[in-house]
Image (cartoon, rainbow, N blue to C red):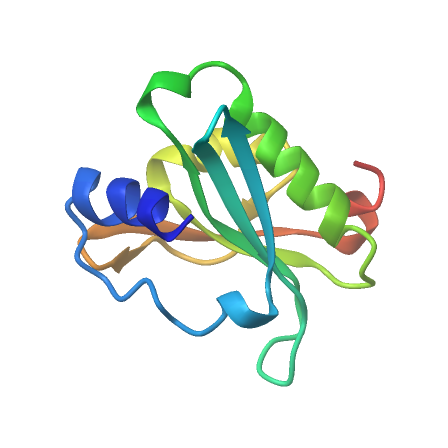
Length: 133
């Protein structure tokens, strides 16, 4: 799981950031495997003392499985898992994926920002809508 995240988020996207943020210990991890290989991943987190919202992130799909619908399924499963909470879902989406996430009901929640050299955008899905997904 960590190797797949590093391969895509750090190496492929040339974004040297600290992936080990200690959120993994309390997160829920969605993994897709084909044979012995992990091919897709997403991490879900719940509200805490620091945040009043749920979130998911670190969404990755191996190159050879992109365009197969696997990313869409990961987002749907993440929303289904997090939709049980009575709160909004807030994500930090890569800017070029704004339209992808808007198909799930996410809307802009602020201005674009730089995250270790990669343009991002905070997006929010209201609780009322998340429960219907």
